[in-house]
Image 1 (cartoon, rainbow, N blue to C red):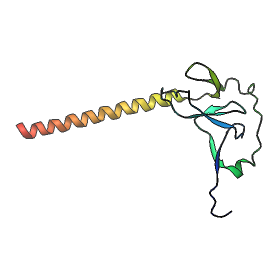
Image 2: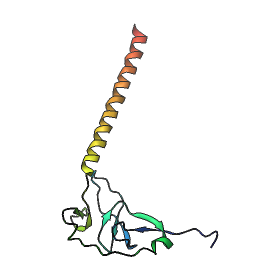
Image 3: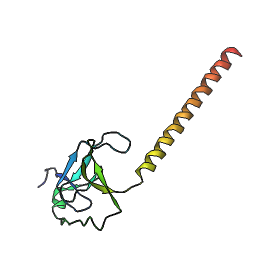
Image 4: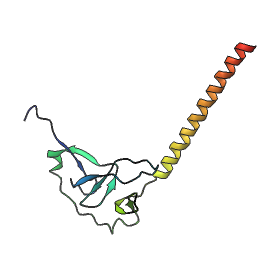
Amino acid sequence: MEGQEEKYVLVCPVCNSREVYPVTDVASIDGAFQTFYHCNHCGFTSQFFVEMEEKEASKLEVKEVDLEKLKGKIIPVVSTNNRVIGWTFKTQNKKVVSTAFNLAKLIGLMLLLFLALGLLSIFLRLYV
């Protein structure tokens, strides 16, 4: 059908299910509230789900996930009221956040240094 806009849906990257819904009571690793999504079929919870055209997504076969095989690779996702709402894969997010925070501190220090140098140059022009 020409001229009709294609509809997009979220698809679980683990089991291919389209039973994906937003979760509102999960804080990310940096403490900020961001949109997480939860797959009602396998329980996978993450900020990152695949978005595809509905007609393409309908061709995918939904897979069963054996959580026993994933032991040691997954961790529970806990809501802000300490309720387990799903699971996700272990990542190195703490290191990424730490690195980003350190980079932000470095940029802040550089800006302060440039500000101090600018003020010093103004002072020298006025009084020397």
